[in-house]
Image 1 (cartoon, rainbow, N blue to C red):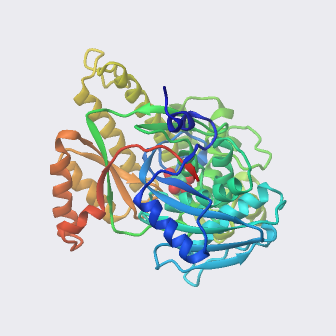
Image 2: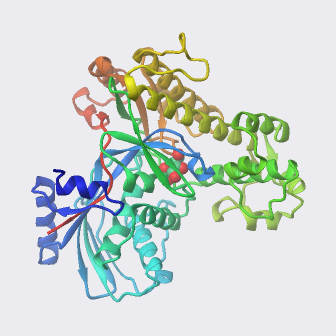
Image 3: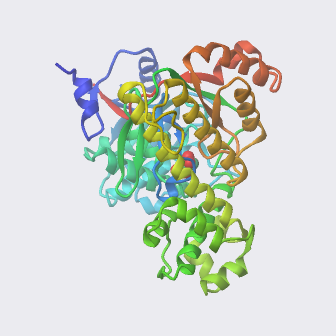
Length: 489
Ligand code: GLA
């Protein structure tokens, strides 16, 4: 007989199970009670994620392959009969925050003096999205106590977990029932209130993740299919110690709009009208009706230059500068005058091919331990387990090189970890948005101890002056976890 937990996890709704006895939950409950004078009425847990492959392509409409982490955002919550939010954090570094929440239009999300979002802005994004979904039809609010253990600004999706946990808490407290895919889409939309045009991967895996497998996530419609990962390898996450806060600069949105402009130009020069709508690179691909490999050729044909000025883009699209800004650019990219369209589009189409190849190899290898190779990687049509890991690893490495050279979102520390890993025979890549944050490495199980040890020595100790004994905070092996869950009393 499956347990209550197992049944709930299989449901298409966010699982609701009895609160387990757990040290962390008890501690949070005590903090909540000390602060608000009563027990929380429920808890919400939303995991962080590591993306195995498929970087910067979700907002172009292409599938990605992430898995959920054990690290999460845990929230203790109670409904209150007052349109207000009372927000506390178990980490005293994050200051308390209270606000009225009469309508979603009134919730303003403004950055601090350095242009970085305040921590509570992510919670406000989730509440704003939930209120919008409810069409402001509530007089109630929430008391929230948060305890997170996903390293912040590390590319492991701590912000999306916070947005999603806030949105889910608010909706559950109001008895709103939604499917996992509906709430994931709502949370993706809500997070855009922070100012970045993310694609929805982080929120999708936060809700759709399953234990022990990664998910192949497709968009429009949002769907997740489990992918079994090779049994003889482990995914290791290593922090580069360079902070990556994608909402603090326009680097992320710049890539998003470069992809939009590339898609407009590809379609226009191919003679297909775009009706001045925002088109993703995958929509351009579908409308043109060619293979991904042929799209790569078309990029070389239609976008041969390394740099396109705003004027040049306007001339090709036959529109004025103001119109270009209003139609395709975001508030923080309107002043950009030069765009790298070829490089970004090439990364996207090539990465989309890599995701499919990675998934096929995983699927075939999980069947019988032997895989029929694809794309010329075969040895008499059959690939051994070792070769499977080598192929997957090479795909990850190519992904990293492309992110470094074509997408320009790496960081010297990330590159250094990738290089050290490669010398040890472990392939890795940056994960998440980049510009810092973490590397994910595909490490054969028999190399694990040695690999982590050498990273501690070569990167954390020698390069970052971090004592080997403290480095476990920054480099760890991880197994795929399940998605968001609600604990009731
Ligand atoms: C961030 C965004 C995601 C995705 C990744 C890059 O995490 O939130 O939607 O675009 O960057 O793959």
